[in-house]
Image 1 (cartoon, rainbow, N blue to C red):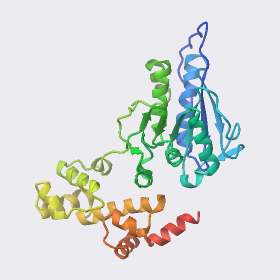
Image 2 (image 1 turned 135 degrees about the horizontal axis):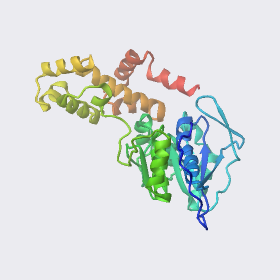
Image 3 (image 1 turned 90 degrees about the vertical axis):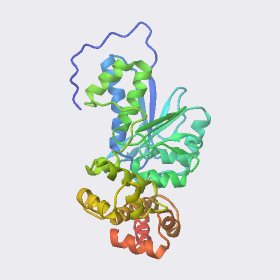
Image 4 (image 1 turned 30 degrees about the vertical axis):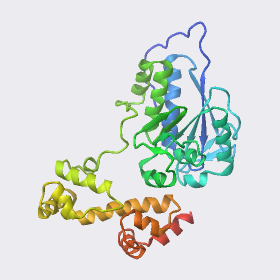
Length: 333
């Protein structure tokens, strides 16, 4: 990323504070975008201030290189070792995060937590923190694609569906560019909002998001439909996956006739309410299938299907394979 700020950095003060250090733990197949979105604000804060406000270290279970989800390899500074007092650990997750939660990784995180280390996670790294028990009784977020499985597997964690969450000495960011917002919050707290804004400008990050901002647009926003009654029906559907509401009842609650609801869905979504609802339930089922050890029957019931046979038939019609084969294929990779 080119740097264009022409300003002359200020001279350091007579007794500059020591640099704060971030330790990035790169899990196998971590996502590059989240890692870069977290480390670049630190580099830019150093450059724009003219001082080494931050330093960082890259570590991993193997200690030599870490494999990124895009196939690139990153050279590490070393293996999992004891951090210094005042360090912040950020676990960078990505694909197949449950497999990356190995015994050595979990044991290291638990040891660091017992020492009082501030620990955070980017993208799916929150899964590993939860697996280590470090998010029990805490608020946390994770990438929206992993939220269904996360909520089922870790009921003692309060899942917040925002871009990032800070709960005491635990930090979680949802992935992608959410890490930028999390790090800008840290820079603003450490060195002032003005420096954080200058870093954001350098990254062409024009809208700094807060802890309250949602990860995704609402369903109508994602599909480009802004009819208020349609929005009401879609929200009702999303809130009732396990116990689906009939189209007739959905229509009545929205002040519509069943025929009017059908026309509304056909015009804005190109499908019937029944078909859209089925796709929504099957999408949730697929997330649970790939992210949790729940049985096919348990997933069927959690997504509003009366039997595993009916669920399997609907799943195959949509995804081209049965739930059992989907899970088997995922486990083979």
